[in-house]
Image (cartoon, rainbow over all chains, first blue to last red; front, side, top):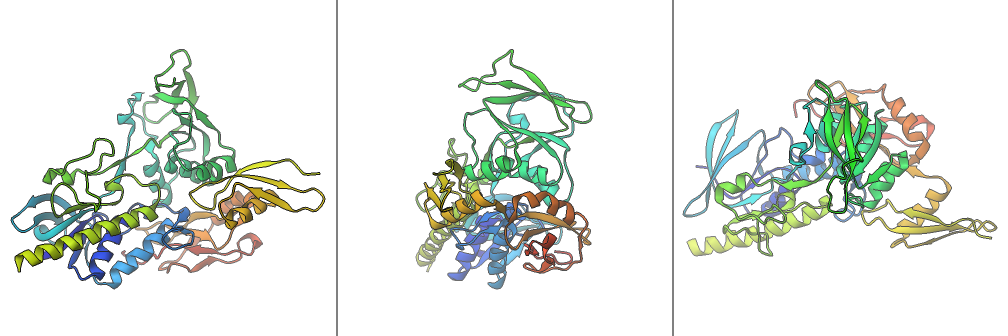
Length: 331
Length: 125
């Protein structure tokens, strides 16, 4: 059976930084990535603004990813792409990780530590209780970003953005540059949740309005989105009836929050913090299961990838200490 | 006599400093307050006189698995040139493989900046 000091689940910015740190300090490491390419969400974040802390210069997402992918590849870390983790089991000396891919089929790997670097997911319209039809044209900002930047498709011609998270603001600019009309950003709170600089360079630069204390309550259209109903909300974010208005659009882009992804962590009964939706960890990023570490957006949603990188290094160093301590007890 | 006070949000870093920018009508000198660093002051002056932005976008490729390649301008371009630049770049198709940093379009619209690849695109990867 293949044995590793550490198996890193996820090949995005957190997984790459953790794996690199573990490897250069002498650990035997494997990265498991379900996509064909390493880099995670950075691959589709083609805008700049990354790396100011880590590299003291402004980089785009793909450039930031490229640095860490090259660093990882130069150290000859074992990497398995297009590979899914289906099970995690605690054993006497560590863990068994069940994986599946098209090359080797189902395989069980053994390791001393696990780094959970599975990133986060976007909140969808199902979690927002928007009622109405189920037409095409309703996308999360990240899905729209994937369609535009990776697939080269324009998801809509005339759209409304619900929520003012950073990806929503970035997509307002991106869709405008690609020729779509962005009617406006609707935010239920009275401040933007994204960074101030993104309000400037993504909305104000293109004269895209942002409406506060407004939300979308219903979508209309059978095959394709035809319009949405917007309404005012009060300070408790409750809809004020009588203020409903119909807005004609063929796209609704949702940027209403990110949730750490920890489905695989549940296999080990890792305790989750209901506030962050990420695992409860000690100051060194170890979860309640000794030998299981969490970092990056799987732990909590970070504003900046630079902070994800720094956080992943802490988890890696902590895992190294744990590996050393365990080998001493064994030997 | 000072010209009117301009309120600005700095876009140089994630901090997003709220700055006040004012130009002296006679001397032309620009006074910036609220900035946390020198980069902010430089941005504010540029923004007052002639706003510029780095353009990040994608170009078409000849690779069926990866139909787009991410690119950026090698320097900032005037804000009003962003949309003309996008329209101009619509017609380009990039031959792969391409290494990160490769110049794909030289001297974009005569603005003295190039369009460069921000990713490496190889066959089958």
